[in-house]
Amino acid sequence: MYVHLDKELEIKQLRKKQVPKAHPMPDFSRPFVMERSVKPQTVPIEPKFTPAVCKRPSMFYLTMAV
Image (cartoon, rainbow, N blue to C red; front, top):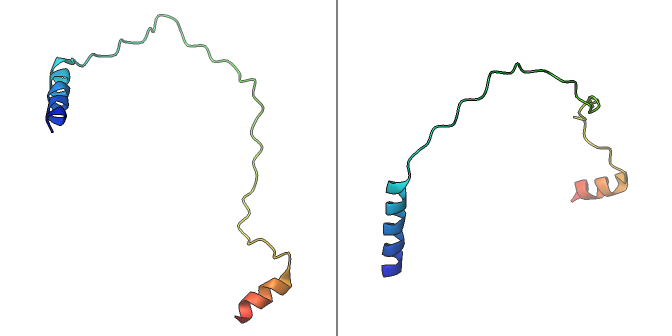
């Protein structure tokens, strides 16, 4: 039980010591230059919304009868 309280006190002290720091401003002295990508373009594929065709229709009818 005391170990748990000690850990909580340590955490509280660490949080009091921590000071939030701001991120440095980015360097805008050089203009940004766009470069073409070397990756190939994505080929679109149409989604298949229709149900898959049953390969063994006999099994389909057996399960429907039950």
